Structure formats: C-alpha cells, structure tokens
Length: 412
Image (cartoon, rainbow, N blue to C red; front, side, top):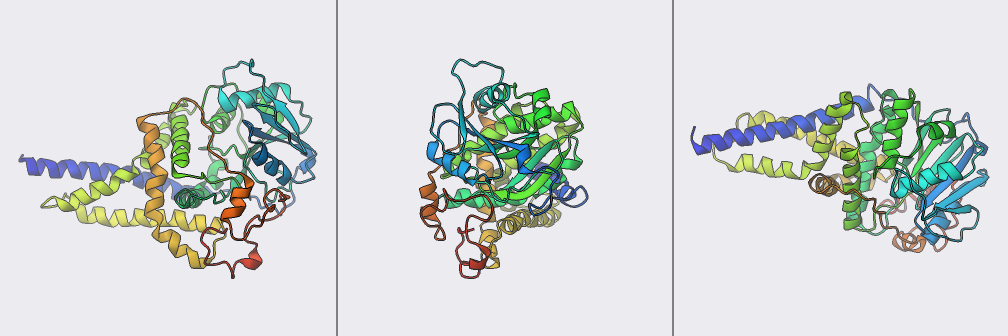
C-alpha cells in the first residue's frame, strides 16, 4: 500500500470513528427528548408539598454580597433559610452556619461542607433544597412528590459574550433532563437548584471524595433506592461564567468529576464514555473533515460522510434554538445564535478536552460577580433590581418589554 493510500484509509477510519461517536450521542439525545421524555412540572401547577416543607441551604465560601442577593430571592413562604459558609459572614434573613476548620470526613471541598451541614444543621422539613451562592430563585412555589427535585437553570449574562453563548447552547442540550426520570441513573444533576428528601439524604450521605458532588450523590442515591426524579421548569438564574477562562476551568472540573467517579454500573459505561468523548474532542472534528477534502483522491465514502455530517450539524443548531426558546429570546435574535453555534460548540468543548488531558482533582469555585455588575451589563436592570428580586417572577426583560428589546441579544 502506498503512503498516500495508507493516509487516505487512516483519515477515513478517523472520520468514521468520530462520526460514529457523535452520531450515537445525537441519536441517544433524540431518543431522550422524544420517546423517553417525562412530563416536566410547571411552577404554576399545584404541588404535593408546599414551601413550608422545605429548608433552603445556600452554599458559599464567603461571598457576602452575592449570597445576600440569593437569600433575598427566596420566597417569604420559605420560613427556614440557612447559609453554609467556610467563614463567618453577615446575612439578613438567614441563619449562617460556619463549617469548622477541623471537621474531617471522606468528602472534600464543597461536598465536605454539605456533609457537615447534613450532620449538624437541624432540619425538621421533608426536603432540603440546595442553592449555589449565586442562584437567584424564580417561581419557587412548591415541590412535587419525588426523591429528587431538579430545578432548571437559566444562567444570566455577566459580561462574557462567549461564555453566555455557550450557556445558551448548554441549556438547549439539557432539554434531555426531561428523560432522566425514565433512567435508572440520571446522567447528571445541577446542584445549584436541587432538592432532596431529607430521609434519603441521611441514608446516602455526602461523604464521598468527588469534585462533582451533586451528580455523584444522585448516582449513589439511585443505587440506594429506585429513584423518583422530577424536573421543575422554574429557570433559576445562576451566573454565567464572567470570563472565558472561568468557563474553561468550570467545564474542566465537570468533565474531570465525570471521568473520576466510578459510581455508575458497567451497563452505563458505554453511554457515559461516548458522551464524554463526543463532548471533549468535538474541536478536532473540523480538522479531520478539512484534511479529508485537502488530500488528493479524497477519503472513501466521503459523500455519504458529508450527508451524515450535515444532519449532525443540524442537531447542533437544534440545541442552540432550544436554548433560545428556554431563554425566551425574541425570534429576531435566534438567527444570531444559530450563526454563532460553531463558536459555542468549540469553546464549550475546550474545557472538557482540558479535563481529559489534565484532570483536576480539587474543587475550584467558579468566579462570581457582584449584583451591581449584573445590573451594569443589562440595559433592562436598574440599581437594586437584583438584590430586591423576590423570587416570584422573571428577573430580566419582562414579557411586556420583549418587542421593544427584541434586538438586545444579551437582555433575557
């Protein structure tokens, strides 16, 4: 075999291997959002559990101004609000509990703080609802009767257009969460807005070494019981990373935690592996495609490859457009996000690729900005709007203003 022929065969193998990984990942996602989809709970429905059945715990290192806005956003009907911090801070409207420096357990970093709170913070409510320090509550009216209640997220723009673009893309992809109740093991969890039955939490505990404690807990809980998972479409407002570097570090930690956790059974390993590879190595796929066209004679089956690749590209656009719908974007700006989808795909994956090549073993808190910064970068917000938000409605660009603000890409 001549060197040129060998190169063509090698490129063809690489191209088709990549296509197989991406294709299987896309097909699984389509299966989730169609055949496996379960009903998503609307915040306006009447829930089995009222807010008097919920204790809210806000987790922080010690970002006082950020945490105060989060506590303010918790509806008044929640009578028991706690802040679990690594250092002493003053917060109005919540009891502050400081994790002792000498506390030791198997869990580390954020998981260590949650495990300390589980052991030492009193709770008489049916559910414990965890919020990240930057999670602004929206439409929290009650909880369905489930073991795990996941609230959907809608990261708010904080100044980095690229990071925000990637968050819109990610939120669209997370439409698949509607299928997680049909799976034995939900594929991931967002700890910034999630509630657990206190009885289940005490049985499973948080005492496990991991940098993705939220997903790890849900996996271990699924080992303990036949997990009842509910998704509430409340769209809590957490902060999009304020910089590209902060986002890359965040994605690196997520991917590292997924790779390091061995909680999933072997039957789920092929699915998890395929998704990890498809996410992390997506920036390399365009290079392979270009190489196939540049080498004389082209690679075998290139025409069929191009057809299938076009279909997969359409799937990426679907993720973005579903993200626009989740953000309630004005239709005028949907084409802008669609055109920018390739950028979102590449930058969303770079942090994951970093996690594959150099996994992180320690938890690093994603940088947060002060409420005033959010107000400064949103034309629709005035000073005090974030800290005064009461958790009962949208924070940015009320529906009545959508026609006027349709052209503003980052006001959502």
